[in-house]
Image (cartoon, rainbow, N blue to C red; front, side, top):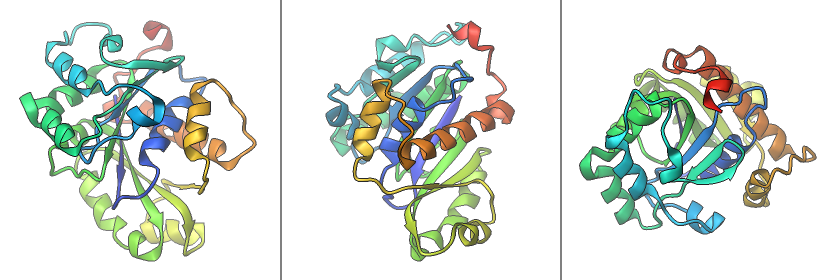
Length: 254
């Protein structure tokens, strides 16, 4: 099952929140998570978590996947970073990233594999849109989380973007990062959806993402609570989304 994390216009934190959500996944939902850095503007996860980019191996493996298999053997192209959690860092160079995702129908084959696999695939797509090279990832997604800054000029653009995202058939959530110019109730009313999550600003956000992979589950700070809430909301959507119907009992994934 595929989940897309995207940005309205370079909103900060998309990559790190995708990592946090995978690490703070609900304990009563034992499905594995695979975080894929698919940002064609270039990746940061490799340097941030001291891992090599493995996007090329992911894209090479996708067309060879046997759709009848229980699940994809993700160990051939990803690093295990926690219990039931994997990470596929993208290349730092925008030119390399674009070339990889364009080559050999890479986006389509990876999106199809993730959609049929019995794990939750979290795609960090940066500022990509459904009409671009990563269109197949959007079209196979059960849920899209759109990150936006809380300032008025950014929020004003969100409703039109939500309409375009809903055309893909995905459930759409909005994540408002940092302080807002309005109250939370005003933002929710303006956007016309109750599926809005407010994420705090925190200078230690990257450090928090490293800690969550190490199994440290401190809930002293707002980042952890917000990440857990967003992860729980996504997990619930996948249980009832038509594109999440391929979920299996957790025991079958172990």
